[in-house]
Each structure stands twice: as C-alpha cells, then as structure tokens.
Length: 365
Ligand SMILES: Nc1nc2c(c(=O)[nH]1)N[C@H]1C(S)=C(S)[C@@H](COP(=O)(O)O)O[C@H]1N2
Ligand SMILES: [Mo]
Image 1 (tube, rainbow, N blue to C red):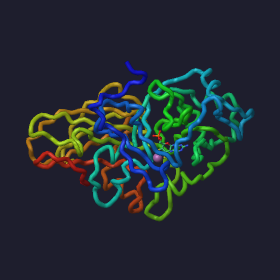
Image 2 (cartoon, rainbow, N blue to C red):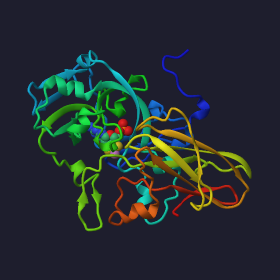
Image 3 (cartoon, helix red, strand yellow):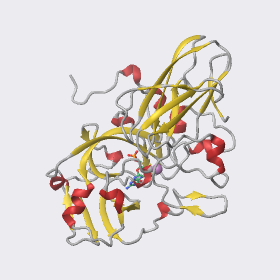
Image 4 (cartoon, rainbow, N blue to C red):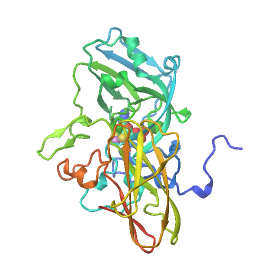
C-alpha cells in the first residue's frame, strides 16, 4: 500500500527533460517525453511546464479570481464559490507557441520527438465555463477583450477575445481527476481550448473587460510572428493542424527488418482530426492511418498504421488534415510565410530518416 502511487521503478527514465537557465532557475520549460508514452492523455507528473518566473505557492483558501472592468457588477470568486457552479470536463491539449521551434532553424537539430515537440500535453480538464461567470458579472456590450492576469511573479498577462471567452473557455480546477498541479496553475487556470499555450494563463487572478487588447509583452515582442516585410502579425491564437510520428522516432532504435506499427499523435486548434496520412518514401506516396477512437476536438488523436521495413534507408512522414480542411504544411510551405528564423507557431511536417542500421534521425525534406 502507498498513499500516492508511483510508476514502476523500471520506468524511472520516463521523465520530463529540461535545462535550467543559469541564474534564473524559475524561468524556462520542461518537455513531455512524448515518444515514451502511448494513448492520448499526459500523466500529470509529465505535463510539460513553461514558467516565465517560477511556480507560486498559492493558498487556495485565500486565492481570488477578480472579474472587473466593463461589467455591471464586479466580483471576486473564491475556489469555494467556483465549486458551486456546474462543473464540466473536457479532454483538451495545450501546446506552447514555441513548440517545435528548433525545426525553424536552417539545419535539422538532432533531437528526439519529446525534445523537439514535447511542449505539448493533453489532459481531461474540469472546471467552470467562463461564460457562466461573465453572466454573473454582467459583461457590457462594449467589452470586446478580457485582460487575463496570473498570480505568479511574472504576472503573465494576455488579451483574450470576448467571443472566445463566451464560447468554450473554462476556468479549470482539476486535471485528470485531481486538483491542478502547482506547475499547471494551482488552484485555477484559464483554459482556452485550441488556443496557443501562452494565453492559457495559470494561477489566474484577474480578468478585466476592456474595449481594446492590452498589447502586453507576451503578445507583442513575444509570441507574434515576424513576417517577410519586417512587420509582426499579432494574435495568431488558434493552433495549426499538426502531427508527429512517435514510434519509430529518434532514440528508439529499430531491431532489424520486419513488421512494425507506426504510431503517432495529431491535433488541431480548429477542431477534430479528420485524416492522417503516412509516407514511408519521403512524401512521394501516402497511405491513410487508422485513428483511435474517440477522436475529440482540440485533443490529441492517436494514429496507427502497420508497416513492413525491408531494412533499406527510408524517410517516414505524417500529414494531418482537420475537419475544417486545414492541411498540415510542408516545411517549405511553412517557412515561406515568415521572416527567416521566425520560430513561433511551427506546424510543418516532421520527417524521420531511418538508416540501414535502424537508427532514426530528424531530417528536413
Ligand atoms: N501565469 C502564467 N501563466 C502562463 C505562463 C506563465 O509563465 N505564467 N506560461 C504560459 C505558457 S508560455 C504556456 S506554453 C503555458 C504552459 O502551461 P503548462 O506549464 O501547464 O504546460 O502556460 C501559459 N500560462
Ligand atoms: Mo508557451
């Protein structure tokens, strides 16, 4: 018996990966080891982390979420008061705006799938629909944006369009059945399904209704897209359609020719995954992979396809298409949209080369 169970000790190497910035231990990110997991849900202890200034230790009995600004009746909600509303549960991914940014460099970084794409996790989130709370405070018609602020030392702040706040936005309190982890925003975070990671404000303490966005640093100098003409595109909020093969992938060596199941994950901020195609010849021919049920909107979808490897050098790729007909772009198509080196919102096809020894590496096609 044990009070809180742990994975088998044989699994001790299944860990988040991170490096600490010297002198700034609270700033940075840790990544989910995607290639060492299966299914679609991320165990809470392996959810990726992105902190701009540490993880605050918040006493849930004294924390309040204040909703004010262009509202008829400003209010402060305690955790206890939020628990009196009807709660909802939804399986949704969160992907950092900077996920896969290493692939925007000129040469393919020799990293594994988690190190490349592991600023991505998926959980069942339980909480209160934000529209209920906005109903309580009486949002004014002039209010077009909500400025969301976290209670961390960074006081991370982002401008949220009111349409999203009234649609599927949630103040999340639980993650896969247990209270949200401190690293994910305990005791409450903003969850904007399908929107870029950064705007899902953790340790949420304030929502201010305004007519205009606040143009905070995380929506101007950061997380905006530098375009070829030198201007920056702001508020690219919806996560693009994307997929990655996890088995095989770098670090998982092939053990000789024969039968393998190719398996990976696909996701889209616009809705559900409709189709995933897999190529074993660098994109010349494609075959449809099977999608594991349930295929949920704004959640990770697991795809699988059987494959026989004859032992020759091959290049594996996957391409996702969502139910809004968005197609995952090639690396060339993605790169052509931006100024050179623009790192955010990377969703191009991932290619893995397998050599005759069975070693798998990241390549650009
Ligand atoms: N208050 C606050 N909210 C925050 C952040 C932060 O540093 N402080 N990081 C943001 C970024 S950049 C991302 S990608 C997600 C990461 O969520 P996670 O750490 O739960 O994976 O939270 C966002 N919300
Ligand atoms: Mo992020």
